[in-house]
Length: 250
Image (cartoon, rainbow, N blue to C red; front, top):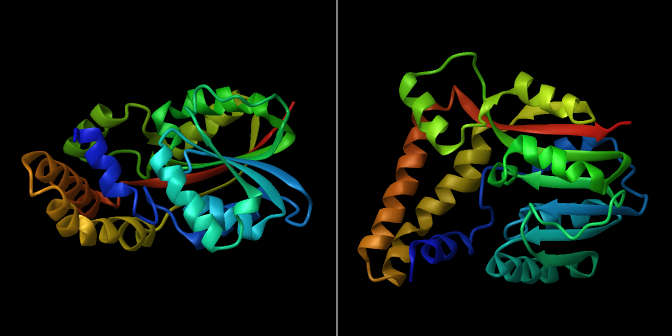
């Protein structure tokens, strides 16, 4: 099994594939100012195993297209949605977020938690805008600097991992330059990282290593994930995910 398949195996049983939480989802949804009783068309792009998709299905009168490029994640999503009685509201779509088969002016809401970085924030907000109806809402979480400056080691790490990391003001400017009016912004709290994402992952390390015979490749993945966790615990005052909610305007 190659490294990519090992990563999928580590994460596919998880509730979340990145920082987030149900309370934060509802906060973002409130900032979106949508009528929850109206019939809505929603796309959840980079949905993973469906933590957000299922919650959106529970809260909205919506038809939801759930997009991920990993079928293994979508299989988990379908199982989860069926167990919660909302599968009929969700259409899984296996595909790439930079090559979506969507018609223009289709969606009332495009949702994407911790995934837009795969194509870059600027490219994502620009490429997805045509799919929204006029007045439709984009809600995305994106890795964000919380301070104007930060330690050199942290700066170097994130410049290598994701050069588009920036402050909230810079991200807001990108939204405004690409035909959106910002509706709201907030920072994901520490619980979204530690309680909802990192601690469950750590609790799964032993079983993951056991499944793969404690192989060198599996141990390397655990080491890399452990270093990411250490980095966050040391430098969490300087970065987090910011949740950006913006409306498509003329």
